[in-house]
Length: 306
Image: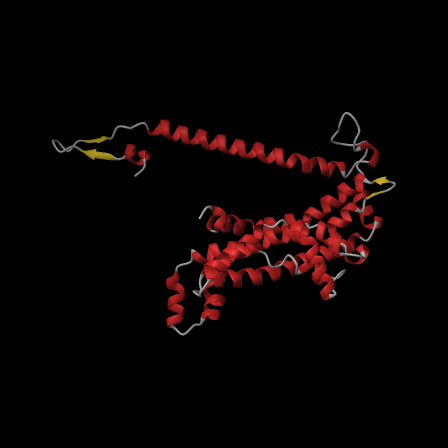
C-alpha cells in the first residue's frame, strides 16, 4: 500500500474508539524526489533528442539553400532564399525515380525472404529437437564473425555462375540468409511457453500447423523488429549493389543514386541534401508505423537482455 494511502486512512484506537488520522511518514519527500528524478530523465531525453535531430534539421535547411551557400562561413541555418525547387530538380538530374523503385523493390523482397527464412530456421533451432541442433547453431552463429567485405568476391563469383550479375536476384538473395535474424527469432521463440504447443499437438496439430497458428501469431513484435532492421539494411546497402550492378541507370539503388550527384565537374550539394531528405521518408514512416511493436519486441527478444 502506498504512503499517500496510509496517510489518509483513519485508525480507531482500542481504548475509546476515537478516530484519528495516521501520521505521515515522509511520503511527501519521497514523492518530491521521484518527481524530480522523472523531470530530470525527461529533460535529459529531450536534450539528447535535440542533439540527434540537429544534423537532420541542418541538412533539411541546407537542401533549401543555393549550392554556393551551403559551405558559406560563418555557417547559417537559412540561405539567401528558400529553393523548394531543389526537391523537384532532384528527379530531373537523373533517373531518381528508378533508384527509388529499385530500392523499394529489393528492400521489400529481401525483407520478405529474410522473414520467411529466419522464422522457419529460428523455429527449427528453438522449438524442435533434433540431433546436432546446438552444434549446427553454433556454426551458424560463427558466420556473424566474418566481415561482409571478405565475402564480396566469393559472392560475386557465385552470382556469375548463376548468371545473376546485374539483376534483381543478385541484389536480394546474397544477404537474405543471415544468422542475425535466425538468432533473434530463436531467442524469442524460446520464451514462448511450451505448454501452448503441446496442447495443440494433443489436439492433432503438427509442427507446421503449430508454427503457423500458434508461434507466429504470438511473435508479431519480434517479426516487426526483424522486418525493420532488415529493411534498413537493404535500403542503406551501397557496396554490394555498386559491385554487382553494371547498368546503374537500370538496376541502381538509392545509395548509388545519392552518390551520382558527385562527379568530375563537382558536387551538387544542394541536390544531394534534398535527395537524402527524400530517401529518409520511407524508413521514417516505417519506424513510426511499427514503433509500438519495436519497443515491445526489443524488450521481449534477445536484444532486451533475455
